[in-house]
Length: 588
Image (tube, rainbow, N blue to C red; front, side, top):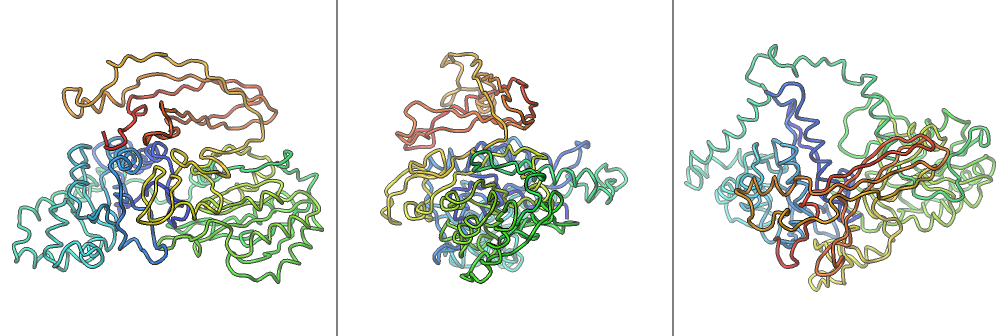
């Protein structure tokens, strides 16, 4: 119970991916910082002798597909170039290990370049030798079976045991090694020394968790059950939900709404009274779930109609929702996705609204007597271009958790100003035609194997039109941001570690992540509303968008609270590793 196979730090490379909702988004730097913070928060505390729990970096490597047009994650063999691996698919895992000090790494179901992840010696060598990983490697549940039965990488059970154990796998989430290791030992495919080396890694984690020491000597064993559902934790859940909301559209300052001006609000749509939908996937049992309807009801009188379903073509409830909108002072249309559309084992084929939701939005907003606000619950981007024609404002809530409905209402009625920024690019629906889901390449490329020309993936490489860029998020106030200083303005080449410079690999790595320059900006709240502001720092390389270079890359972010008229300085430290550009044909 003290090992947690979380978090999911794969790159959300395509909005169709069903498990993108679990990730930190599409950017390697953002995901790296998330990985570091997640692991450190889970594992470390006041007692340096023990781990609180054992956290995990998953799923290594290149995992980002569930089941798309008959190709599932158990069979998929992705083609990943050394360049894409170096600057997109691996950085978060490197940060998870080196900076977060994770005690577990999970290999994924898929194979890459013909080798199943759990049988890939190069992956574990990279983790242990170059990143100095100290922990155990586990396979995803059933991934060892896949090495033999779906990837057909080996021919016998004994060969499979040998392949994964020699590659560095310590633990099988499944029964394959339990059932077949003895035969592999008798077949002399594996020996006692190899088995004992893996057992040592597993027992080491148990020692680090204090499982063999007296409980009364361990600080973490004294944590009482009363901390569960404590006021502090409830407040944190609400804060996280509020801070994650992203205001996508706000025509003519429609939001925030006023309880005085709009005392009766129609709350309609398939997610209007949703509760479990708020939780996304992989969740515990919450003490309560506040729906959007309940949250809005704390501010104003409400009139509820479901209107339609997430999926399906039933329009019979449209008239009731339209009547509610016509008779109310404002309308909040809560639509989006749920786990029947995006989930583990389930990818989307389209990124437009499923079912008749587009038509529902236009019908209800067209009938609304007052302003019409769309609230979107989803774990990934949706083509909202049609909704933008009819709605006065659009708020993306993600899957905001147990207090999600209250957080949504707090933002709609200005108890809290929105300041969230989107962790991914919002695409038009035709993205699915220009980018083949099976193509793992990040850069724009012709894909003779899978079909049409790819326009690239994520904000760093995508060359097509977009609805909203990565980092998009509107505010209730206005801001003035001034780049005040870059110091030093010129960096000598001798200060940057290149190639094999440094006494050792570790020395070279330490030099690469040491601060190289400081970027100072001044942020002023020039409006009348107190609000958080999320500052983002991007770098644009020479020749951006050519020769495999990204268009731009995130290298820093900061969040702070500002009163009206208040100015604060925001400082970013940028390292050499954040300014590096890989050669187009290698990972160097």
